[in-house]
Length: 167
Image 1 (cartoon, rainbow, N blue to C red):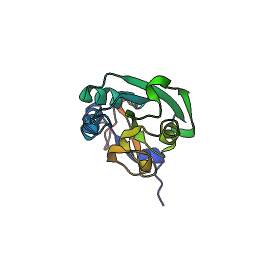
Image 2 (cartoon, rainbow, N blue to C red; image 1 turned 90 degrees about the horizontal axis):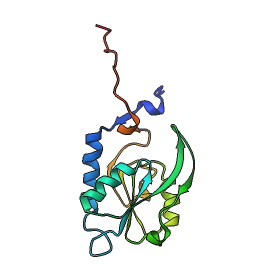
Image 3 (tube, one colour; image 1 turned 45 degrees about the horizontal axis):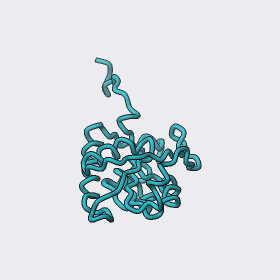
Image 4 (cartoon, rainbow, N blue to C red; image 1 turned 180 degrees about the vertical axis):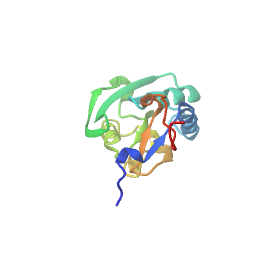
């Protein structure tokens, strides 16, 4: 019997790690856009996709960056995904030449919703779990479905009691 809570199988990602992994994502995407290898724009899925999208846009020199806000979590509880802010309609079309970037694909419900809106977009995440992986065209690192990823923007440094006592 596994007495571990879902969040206890944690994968802690530092700012340095998310930067390195986002650069690796950019390298995988470089030269693979439909316009002579170039991409027209990046759309970050907020909030988690903002940091990777900024790094990818810098690495690939993509100056047009927009956002789509999709809410599917409340704290660590998953609900039904819904769009709360859309990107510019004239930019998006059917998504051709657009990179949609998020930090993580978990179950794939968020990306499934965005894919229905922009079926020709290219979906890229830094991290992927098995259930959501089919919704992603490009990713860097796969983690198990029962792993909870702790991103640096969700964490704070604090004192930790030593394992063998207070001294």
